[in-house]
Length: 242
Image (cartoon, rainbow, N blue to C red; front, side, top):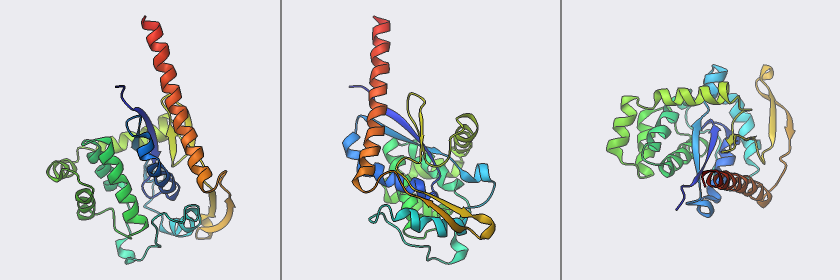
């Protein structure tokens, strides 16, 4: 049986655009199981923007974006301000440690971390929070804790951020990179423009190119294109070897 086709998804875990995309991906997960795998790449916005997690921007941006998916887990931040996670780096490291136990485990922890932020107002910068989420999704905790505490994934997070921003020069979070090298950014998503000079005041909303089930159809088309491209590449390779 051939190995699943791998698609890279470069995103930040605090990005509401990416949260929408991952939510839709999870709805199609069983449909593509065994045929396609998503590799979650650490596109740290703090690496390129050189600032902590921007709460005023997320406060104004997130509710508008998440109206696209009424069932997505979401509540405005309701924990004390002192618990706001100013860095996503530990969360990225945790996902990479989960990846050492399989891509499915990485996907599950990635989703748990995103929902912990967007729906539960948990401080996902904290070790004990990340360990609790890892245990919740069923990771081997002895192995995960050893990997996380040793910092084994720290440089990998840096490398993936550097690769996304500097070598691939992706447009932003989220960006799919298909096996062909094709990049697809912000697929099926609206775009919100804020004026940071005016405390993240909303100045423009560009509607998404789809709505409701149409967005899943658009995502399916993208995933199928990746599968078809990989099949064509394998066919050419076999023909060349014969």
